[in-house]
Image 1 (cartoon, each protein chain N blue to C red):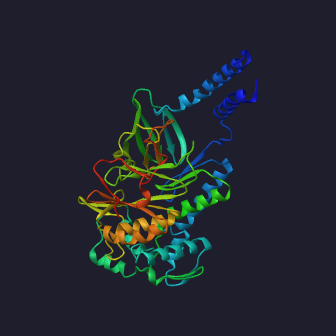
Image 2 (tube, rainbow over the protein chains, first blue to last red):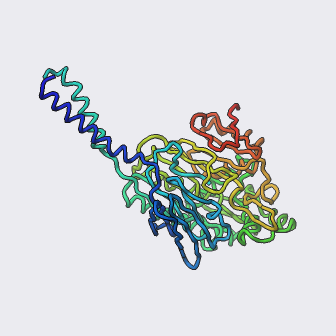
Image 3 (cartoon, rainbow over the protein chains, first blue to last red):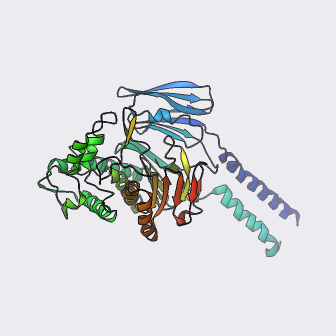
Length: 124
Length: 340
């Protein structure tokens, strides 16, 4: 291999290595945000890596209390009749959601996830 | 440098270009709303205008199909039972399809259950269950075969009523997907309260991964994962909505044969189909039929491309042969039966 060839090969090697950088970052599995949707619109985006905090959501007089932090989130209380959102318990994986249909509130953990168990949607 | 020696370098350039530039990846946009009494999500590799149009379509369907709203098209038709009414072409087509499934399932799915669903679920989910006399009286006004539908003209007998709630979400998902395809969208997921329909492949490529609800666990906890392309996935069961009275649970799926909540040896039914409406009607019907009669029906349907996951109360899961390798069971307390 001539000197010029070696330079080209080195350059391409560097280019390949650089192209792998975004792949490395995108394979992170940790959820980073708890996103709260109220009536179909994004209401708040809360960081998951802070200490546990309680967040109150009120829509048309209906109240739900969420707990977010330490890498997880959940409905703690809700004024809905069925309590399904509270029974859902803690969410701790990216893509996991808890839903309060009567109060029209959705809690969803967001983060890139290439784990085998990640899903794009869920029946219920 | 000769051309032979430069080949490896050219190959490297090509690989680097593909990895580095990642050409043509349009971002996925999404819209959320609460419609048809449930949470709606549309995620698609499409322009924002296409998503807005899809949501407008779903809002329109929400207004016309609700059985609970007297101002909806179905509500108005129910209010005029005994006289002939004219339906919109869309609602007429939906009802026609519903009646077809009623016939094919021997009435296990019945779109005329309104007198009974009003009795069991009309006042929320916490009240005294109706008396056997009231159920018997309501049952007299139920029967899909007595619906007269001639094109757009509908005649219901007096006191009869339509409840298309069991298939409205599926129909909405189908219509949304049809619009997205018409607009040239080749990758999307539409989720209408757990009725999921996917187009093409997921972001990044490969089949979409859809979690199946564990019928014994709170909403969101999975039985397993199924991998799909261009399919609808619908689950049904009595696990979520039920009337609770003095410690007794009454499921929300009413058996058209008895007028009472279905007592099934199945706890959950999942249907994979091209149309989500078909999946909706079938999931309800198979649940009502119970395992033995459901399996007899699914054998025929499997030949037409449908696939099923039937979860029994005994924790046996009957899986369609075509799902072998596509469904991965996660919940350890169940056992898979694929030897049909």
